[in-house]
Picture 1 (spheres, rainbow, N blue to C red):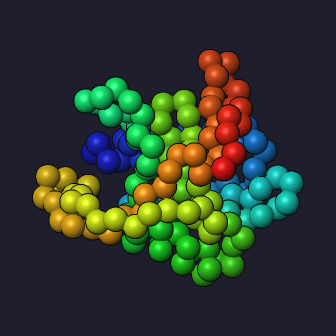
Picture 2 (cartoon, one colour; picture 1 turned 90 degrees about the horizontal axis):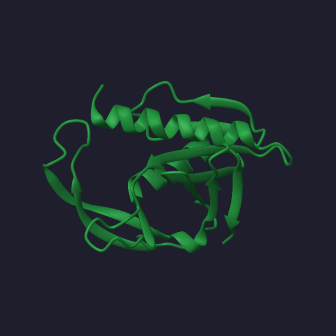
Length: 161
């Protein structure tokens, strides 16, 4: 497995753990690890059908030791998740960013963001060192539902947007 495939699998496993803990139903991973969308599920109380894009990232700056305040997601991925929600007639779409035992969950329909352009790999699948300018959305972590998983495996809501 490539580094990308390992990271993708790790994020999907964490998502499954989180959704199972909170009693989501109809859990379904997309079949292709390279799909623009990663996961589908139904919320337990309101029965909202949800679509998720998942990332598993280290959110600590290796030079300063401080946590990043903003988390990026390529604009094309945001657009793809929103389009999949529309195509499948789902209720909600989310960006789920895991970092160690924390989850920052952004509602892509309501969360404010900043547009930016950054040099990013053309493709994480082929040559991650070959970079190009890409449009990105920057999401501030304080605009997320922040959950943390303790050493016993229990998830807890830490902060709401």
